[in-house]
Length: 471
Image 1 (cartoon, rainbow, N blue to C red):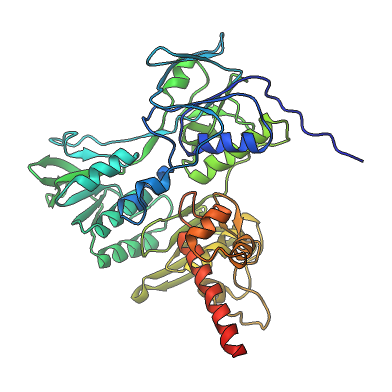
Image 2: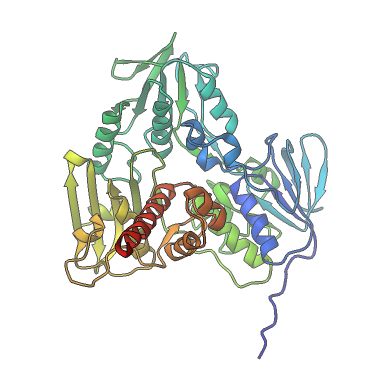
């Protein structure tokens, strides 16, 4: 018996405010799922959409700016189109230059804005964030030592990228250890040791106090040379437009499981959206929200229940991932598995409840990241041989698999499995760039680039071994 096609809920124009990765993904998915109606995208920047999650790779020189540009969309895209007002009664939006666009469905994908601390004596001529390609260009054009404020993932990625450019870099973090929201203390301190070994001056437990003539003064009285200061001290959902429109706003634009705001004709996705009291601020969440909204709007049964938390540091030469709840690592009722190897800069800590992973920190264990993430996402039991899983070696029990299974997702942003990558490799995509073109792996947050590279190398080594054996 044939199944009736899903009912397309869209009969008119979709207007998307914002032209970042979340908006781009939504339009792609709407078209892929059969929506043929008009779509208008309004972006405030004077350039096309690009993947801002890969700005660190542009900054360190491993990617040209053009490489992070997202493909053209089958939509009416307007640049330098800052939306200033929403008339919900008339279902129209107005831009700063006076243009009006009517909508049947409005999607807010306005992203977030950087939180820049006030430092006495530090003006905008010496201070920048890292949110746009223009920020990247400013940093590339600057000279002299740089101070990075904020020891979260973005701050570390920025400091590492600047170091790769040959700059003298100091990383200043006001908390006692790095990435405190995603790591435990031991992991955060070992990460700082790793960064110092690379050549970054790491200062923790201290904040910037004032600035004068090329020197940043810290709260403990010490001084840091800095011709430029980069603020990586957090972001806040961009909700000003939603507030003016009169839809419900808390920290972010409040949405339900179908990404609807308090007005059923208005939706929100990405960094600006608050779902079940949280604003994840992660590209994987934005991707999944875009997928769910596109499915819902094209008549499919789809709801958003949240995205499993997996944070991956995108910094050259450092393999770091945090999975699940960091609070679970100090839970009194959890089985804790710890492996600490300071001499090699390796540290792993896993919290297990009923044999399943509730939280994990992995530093220096690249072979384990995909497998641990897969076990957590699918709520599967941890293998008995925990050490083999972490090291990526053969299982203690003959024939027991410990490596990532074929259906393990290596690229979480685009849901690309090992099996898909292996098939593409055998079909002729023999490099990371070719695999990216064939599967879109690595084109999301960029955190899987090293994993895909290792898979390429292992497949090439296997073919070479087979050839030698046949000779």
